[in-house]
Amino acid sequence: MIKKLRIKFVIINMSIVTIMLCVILGLVFYFTRVSLEAESINMMQNIANRPFQLGVPNELGEDVRLPFFTIQLGPRGEVMETGGGYYDLSDREFLDYLINATITSPRTFAVIEEYNLRYYRVDTPLNHFLVFSDISSERATLNNMMRSCLIIGALSFLVFLGISIELSKWAVKPVELAWKQQRQFVADASHELKTPLTVIITNAELAQCPEYDEESKQKFLGSILTMSRQMRGLIEQMLELARADNYDFIRNTEVVDFSKLVSDAILPFEPVFFERGLNLTTKIDENIKVKGSKDQLCQVLDVLLDNAQKYSKEAGTTWVTLKRLGRGRCLLVVANEGDSIPPEETKNIFKRFYRIDKARSRTCSFGLGLSIAETVVTQHRGKIWVESRTGINYFHVELPCS
Image (cartoon, rainbow, N blue to C red; front, side, top):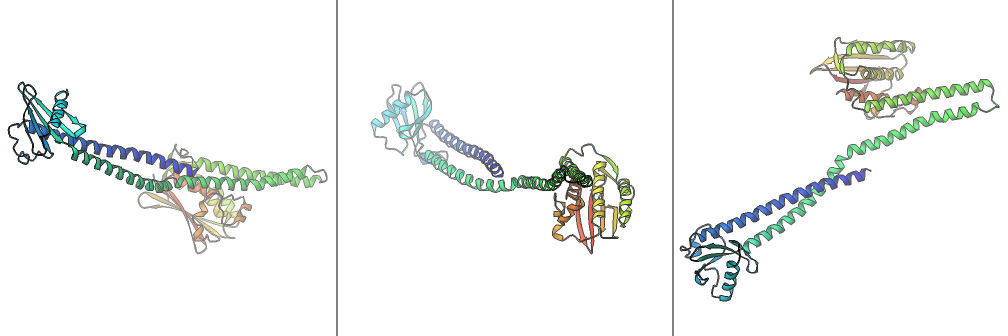
């Protein structure tokens, strides 16, 4: 799919480039041709307007840039005078052909293709004045320009093709990353669901066996219920993550008293920390307000506090701090004493289904909580990161204040 997407990107890009090159080079060629033709006609008109000042061609002025000659005809079409100096006008057959082609033509100026001559005719009641200009150099210039345009166009096409190929790699990189993440997500989700399903199926089959007594069957049913609840928790987290990925989920925002929200979110966790023999310390600045979804922000706090109580060391302490920062931002820090997080894992820890310790799945941790928290914080124009030093893991959440 990614390869087809890159090919489509290159085709569309090169189609646009080709059309632009054709239009630009075509306009350059067209305006050059029109300019040369207009210059030639203007020269011939100037010569026709001065029929008695022909003399030497080089003395006619700067407007004469092409070889030319003139023919003046009488009332009956006889040649009265010729001039120019660039051509041998002694060939009568040649002159008769030019005179016949010019006089019989309804156009005042045109091109005689056989001789590469452009003519301009001035008719008066007493005579006809004909000016002929050699356009060989004009056509040679246009032919050279055509070849140059084709070469420039071909080279430009190849250069843009190379650029488009490189740009296609850059353009589809987010799509490729999302595609890999999606495949990894499906693989990880399937793996996480496979284990409880296997346990459920196995225990259900054992519960149906007649050789087991009622007490054993109750144990089997208890295992089925436990695994079913674990699966429900995983599916709920996956649905929550899907909702968090939807950019419209915080469309209905409000001004939230973040200080009160943090204080309220801590209350349900105090008994949990107390039962596990853990210490919970808070320091919350008052009247800090942010704009966003109250439920989603509360979920971030639930994830961080649940993560802290799960992975704190025995009789460890957890610190929750909320304070103002400069430039209208606030910082929430949830720190707990526990196993240090290696520096190389500080970014991976927010990936979906990622767990530093694979055995953490036994604690019903599926590796989705921090990923959900990161998505929610990002949607609120904030950022989340983790630092680990001296046996304490610090989870930072920075948000803009309202």
